[in-house]
Image: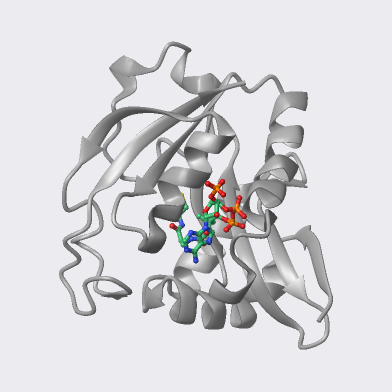
Length: 187
Ligand SMILES: CC(C)(COP(=O)(O)OP(=O)(O)OC[C@H]1O[C@@H](n2cnc3c(N)ncnc32)[C@H](O)[C@@H]1OP(=O)(O)O)[C@@H](O)C(=O)NCCC(=O)NCCS
């Protein structure tokens, strides 16, 4: 097995959706969502989202979806605790999904993928990153990873993913009952 971190590209549609169906939940992302993710990840020809590829199979082993500042808040219709942020909203990037395949977890790949985005975000003057942590993530990996990275909680969103018609890995069938913890990292 040989793993490589590289930028997400628009050619990744098929392997991205197959990874997402297996590791995030069946139908969580559609092909249209993927195209939107590529658009929101790209600013001034730089792609801020990264993937972990298993080069022996050509399949994905992890994804880090990142949207740069001033490029997502007006498109993503998500609720936010903006008043709790200590920096201007237009200097805040968004960490959308981070998932590492089960057999690759606990080996530091999640933080490595995230650091790739953080390095890029710092060069364009980003002051903070906001994310929605999955409170019910198996093994509490979401909270463990985010706290280790230095993220702090700003508020909770019950039923955050309940409007998405997908098979959550924990709830099994829609509607998803899981809670998101909004968290922020100041850079
Ligand atoms: C969260 C996630 C992306 C972190 O990536 P990773 O490569 O596993 O990160 P790390 O190797 O740094 O591990 C993070 C912590 O989770 C623990 N962990 C990882 N996999 C685990 C597992 N399957 N069961 C229990 N704990 C696990 C690690 O021991 C580590 O804790 P520690 O720092 O106290 O030792 C990954 O575990 C994952 O995809 N989890 C499920 C999806 C998820 O919750 N995504 C949302 C992220 S906001």
